[in-house]
Image (cartoon, rainbow, N blue to C red):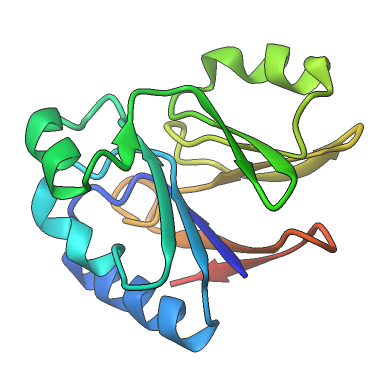
Length: 158
């Protein structure tokens, strides 16, 4: 099971809830679509035996330390990932969203930044913006669980 989240913005209360989701749902891969903000939030998302992929967001001011503390697993996006024969396009700001959708190259396209929850199918792609996991802006904190083989998702409010 995959976990897609974004815009955690240092909300440690919500990060602790996400940590419970990781344990409860037996998450094996986490995708964070940016805006961690500070490195002290990373231990809530980095777990042994769980793959992690992340991109920097526009509010990530301490990029050097975020990169160092994540062992380089947080990168400048957008970038492509190949996992289990699935091709994933990961970004924070959705500047390349239209081109990625219309390219029909990706099984999954993940983005953040807008704090708006989006889950849709477009041709063969599943496009997900998990909304904001912090809840700071909208008052609603969400993440998305994804079963990649079935392309089945569940939205969790945390």
